[in-house]
Amino acid sequence: MTVNPLLPVSVQISTNTATTICDGTSVTFTATPTNGGVNPAYQWFNGANPIVGATNSTYTTNTLINGDVISVQLTSDELCTTGNPATSNSITMTVNPVLPVSVSITVSPTDEICAGTSVTFTATPVNGGDNPTYQWFSGINAIPGETNSTYTTSSLVNGEVISVVCKSNLTPCISNNPATSNSITMIVNPLLPVSVDIIASTGNTICDGTSVTFTATPTNGGLNPAYQWFNGANPIAGETNSTYTTNTLINGDIISCTTNIRCGLCNRKPGHIQ
Image: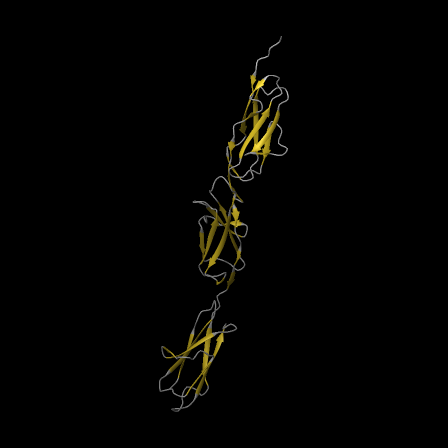
């Protein structure tokens, strides 16, 4: 009689990555049998559920979710075995979500300014971590030294395009890093010298009670200039049109007008009535 010893069957599994991974990471599990025979059979499991088609000594997947528990069952083809089929150790996977990095920028006071106006751009990151890094750009050119979350300048030119690139310091599960922001195209209007002349309908010398109409003629007043008429240093309530008519003037009244437009310099033109 030939009496063969009983061979205890067992199997151990390992992974090619850590047990903590990012969502979508490809992981290969490998079975190492003891007394598996010449042609052992395998069945991989996720928890208590057999994984369809996973019958090789390795199992590769990129669809793990947090808390998945992977194991394998080995059936040996040795003649004299104990513990056959054998179940391996279990590996519990921790799967962290992948966080997309993004950044958006805003401008203050507005994206349409006058030449020389100080403007501040502010970056607001998403999933930037506790210490993201920034690089501001004008068009495709990096702006030297501008590496903070805000960028302030008074030297913008018309049509200049501002954006920022943000690099997150979150680890390890992030995507789209570094991220590029939206772009803001600036409208920079030139400064226009604004002036206004006024004339009186009657000349400067009148009789008491005479009705006088003052007319303002602006230079670079724009489409809808704003006016304010004055008597001396005092604004005349409600007089905000291009003309001002009154019959209550007294000797020595000094009538003037101001006008103001966007990107204009406001000038007052006095008219002296005696």
